[in-house]
Image (cartoon, rainbow, N blue to C red):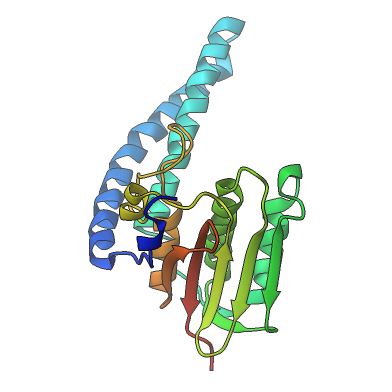
Length: 232
């Protein structure tokens, strides 16, 4: 890719993302109330509606309202995720469980994820939120390579615990590199997501004392690296 040699490492701008998170929290709260009202009213109308055409129209409205609600939920995970409930998490086992969940039922993903590790490593983190981060990174990596290439997940524990997810996709152009951690920015085709994957991961990892960064994978693709303090 042109300019790829200039791409070393991209790390999030924590202060800027904190400001965006505050904005997103306010916007999400304001949008959630009218959407909840729409959903409630549509459900009431559907309960007594017998005409098939009108029922179909109401179900379409409900479906789109639910879609907006799900988008708002994604925004709020970035802005104000649920309070973490940290405990000791054995990361290798957690990652293997997530790999199975992400790949099960998707024929195009079977056999594409390989996990390598140095043995069990333990971090102090919220297990549900760790699973959210791993699932997001795996899904992004699998979707980045439309040719069905391997996604390599490595876990090491020499010092801080480091999780790396490497794909063999096309990598990033200059614009995508600049906006990599920006919420609402997505390199995907329009209509295929709000671009909250990496910002959401940043928020969760940052609140639990970790760090996330992205660098090029050789010979192509990306490596997303997440590090957590190791438990004593």
